[in-house]
Structure formats: structure tokens, C-alpha cells
Length: 223
Image (cartoon, rainbow, N blue to C red; front, top):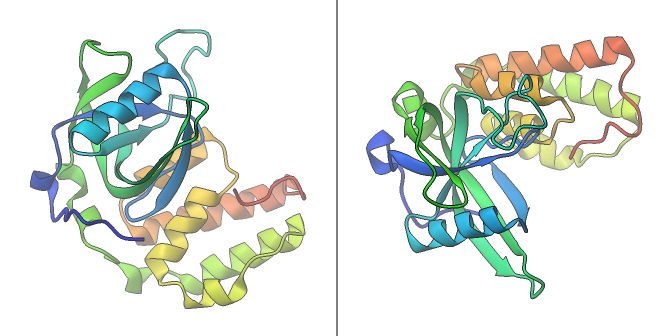
């Protein structure tokens, strides 16, 4: 699935975006994430995005944030995505799909004027995100595939190995990161990795740690 809009650099992205704080949800450039929207504030957020530039910033709530607070603290780095699919369910929900454009750094959260949160953001630290497949040749593909094999063997799950073999390095690494069953801190580390090579290395390391702990089971399936 592609996008009709072209995002060639930070100048093509809005400086103020609505943000969707969601722990455990990881979006990466050119990755796809389906979302089931039902809370009134996020229904309003989607309505706003559809009326404007169709972009939403996915960001995790800080793992150290007070879970009982009404406005949980968010991490400083997220990833903006464009709505490429939209459907109404008839029971008050929206089903949408976002395709990742670029990571962003939060410069400030703006005073609330709607039900949802908005931030002023900068894309300048992540200009390489706008270049498809940047750094692919530096990825330890063999190490990534080995880590995946070890994981699925331990978890006793099935994967489409033909699809894995055919996937370019960027698509492979980012998809595995997004589908991984890791916690909030680990997913944030994957998001904030400076480049694709480092992200692959972090993915391998996290998988090896999880396997060494013996924490992988049939419940640890890829999402």
C-alpha cells in the first residue's frame, strides 16, 4: 500500500500535529499500523485529521508516567503517519490504517483546545527517514533472520518464510520491530535507534535477551 501524497523532507510535514499516545504501539517510516478508534477524543482527532492533512503522530506514553494521571507524560520522540484507509463500523467506531512518514521530536505540547492532544514538533533530526531504504546495505540481515528463527522456534509460531526472504531489509527490520512483543521501553529504544543498522542491532539484542531469560512462549507471538 502506498500514499498519494509525497513527503520528501521535513518541509512537507506540518509543524503542529495531533498526537495519539498509545503504549506498546510502534509506527516506523513506511510501516503500516491498523487502529480501532472508539474513544470520543480520538474520534475527534481522526475527524480533525481527515479535514486537514490526514496526519496523526503516534507516540508512546512514558513507561515511568503515573498510570492514574488523566494526562500521562509522553516520550519526546514519536512517528507521524498518514491515514490511507478509513472505514466507519456503524457502531460508533472508526477503523483506520496509518502509513509511517517520519519520526519527530516533540518541542512542546500545546494547550488543549480540543478533546485530543497536539504538539509542536520537529522532523529535522530525522531527515534520513524520508529516504526509502536508506542504510539497507549496512544491515546484518543474517543476524536478523537468525534472531527471528530462534524466536519463532522458542515460541512455536509460524511465519511466512517466503515473505521474509523476499522482503527488503528496511521492510523486514521495521515490520519485525513493529510486530515485536517487547515492552514500552524496548519499543521506544527501537524507535529512537539512529539508523536502520542500529535498529536491527537493537532488535537482535532484545530478542537474544528475551530468549536468554526464557520469557518466550507460545503467548509471545508476533502481533
